[in-house]
Image 1 (spheres, rainbow over the protein chains, first blue to last red):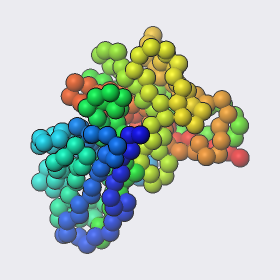
Image 2: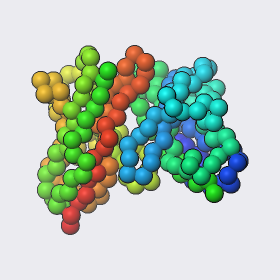
Image 3: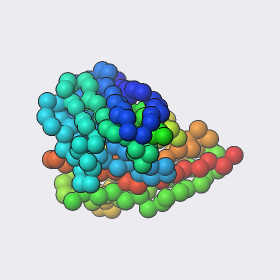
Image 4: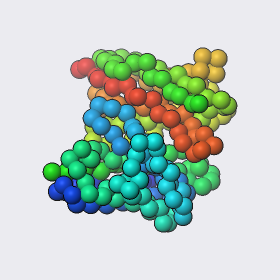
Length: 118
Length: 113
């Protein structure tokens, strides 16, 4: 149980275009979802926290107009990288936490999305 | 504020040897503690977690961790390491009332044949 999926697993796009990454909780309702960015050989950098039906809370230094997050349902959150540039190339990982029970205090992670902006 | 320290950036052990990865935390209340493992190019997989009760917790893949409140530690152990255990390991504490968990910087485990 507590499976989180991400799509796509990798994406290559041209500079200036937008890319959408989907994160789904497959077998539980995720009231809170998190988006992380990870650089090679480094730890996770939290970008934003989103609660279902609410606006996302962005970490300091993360441009909310560039990284659009939508958490419209209890099983789906999306991250859209707008007007992507090569410096946005990275590994993006989502994580989900449920409302109650065993999934309420634990973050479950998706498999990640590798973004390459040319 | 909560924090997590993983003192060892990189550890190398021989296959079949025992393993201990260190984790120290700072947290204002009784912590919820986690260990995750990340293989290259993958997301994080939950190995085990501690919420309360028995301070020795068993996880998947033969891992265990012991919560020691007096030392603010939650070290991960495995009696006999397999080559497939080579990966990045993250310790985490949380969530706070703000809903966020804090992750350590990770320990890279290399397994020698």
